[in-house]
Amino acid sequence: MNLSINYVIHDQTCSGFDTFWNYFSDESNNSGTYHFKDLVFKQYCPDQKCNNDIKKINAGCLWLFNYFFVISGIPFYLDSYKNVVVCIMIWLSYKLNQKNEYGTIKLNNFYSNNIENHTEYTDHKFIGKKFKSYKEIIDTIKEYMDIDISHVSKFYELLKLLCNMITDNKNRNISDFSEHANKFVVEYEKLFNDDNNIDNSSHDKILRVLSNYYNNLEEYITFINIEMKRPTLSTKKTAEKGNVDVSNEIKKDESSSEKGKQDIETITLSPNTGLSDSSLASKLIPVLSIFGAIAIFLGISYKVNNKEFKNYFHYIYANVNTKFIRFLTFYISIRYLDFGNDLKNNI
Image (cartoon, rainbow, N blue to C red; front, side, top):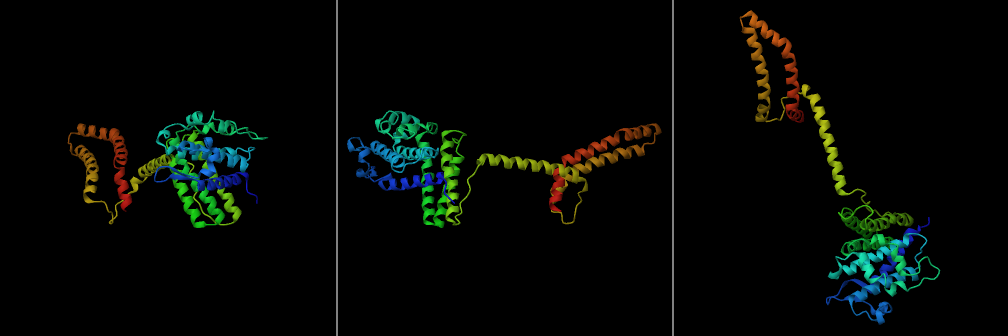
C-alpha cells in the first residue's frame, strides 16, 4: 500500500514545523521577547537584524515559505500546497495575536499592508514552477483570509495536536496518540460549533483543512498496521442535534397522546395502583358529577305523573340524550387523558 500525496504533504508540513519550533518558540520569555535564534533567521531580517517582534515574526514566516517551497519542494500540481500555506497563516496569526494591536485586524488587511507589496514576498523567484513568488502562492488562499487574526489563532492548537499525532504514529506511541486525538476532538468541537462557522466562510475553510488532515491519519494507521483508536469528528452542529432530539420528543408525545385516547376506555384499577387518594379524588369527582346529573335527569322523567310531561322528557331523552352521551364520552377522554395515563403508568 502506498501512502497518498495528501498524507505525505501532511507529514512534510509537520516535519517542517517541528524543526521550526526548535528555532522559534511559541511563547515569549520573562522579559516579553521571543526565543528566537538569530543565526537561523538573520538572512530573512532587514540588514540581517530583527530588532523588534514584528520583524522576527516576518522572518519566521519567510523561513517557513523557503523551507516548504524551496528546500522541501512541496508540489504545486495538487491543491495540497494550499493547505501548507493555510498552516503558515495559522502560525502567523497566532504570533500576531500575541501583540495586542493586531488581534482585531482581519488577516487579509494585514496581508495587504505587510505582504502584498513587500519585496521579500514579491521578488523571490521560482524557476520553472507554477508560481513565480511567495506572494503568488499566498494569493491562492485569499478566500481563507477574510477573518480576524485573533480568530485564526484559535486554530493553532489543532495544528500542534495534529503534528503531535504524526509524531506519535511514527513512534508507535498508542497512549499519547489517543490522548492527543481526544484533545483534538474537544478543540475541534468548539470551533465546529462556533457561531462564525458558516458554510464557505473563511472559518469553515480553515477548519476543513485541519479536519481533512485528521481524517487522513487513518491511512497511516492502516499503513503501519497498529490499532490506534481515535474519535470521529462531528458532521452536525450541537444545536442541530438538539433540534432533531426535540422533534423526536414531540413525535413521541403525539404518538403517546393518540395511543392514550384509544386505550383510556380499557383502563381498569388494580389493587396495587400507586395513584394518591387526593389525585384520584380530584379527577374522579368531576366525572361522577357529570354522570350523576344524567341520573337525576332520567329520574325526574320517571317520577313525573303528568303523562304529557313524561312523554316530553322521553322525547328529550330519545332525541338529545344519545348525542349528549357521545359528546360527554369524547370530552372525558380528552379532558382526563392524563388521568388514564397515570393509571397505566402505575398499574
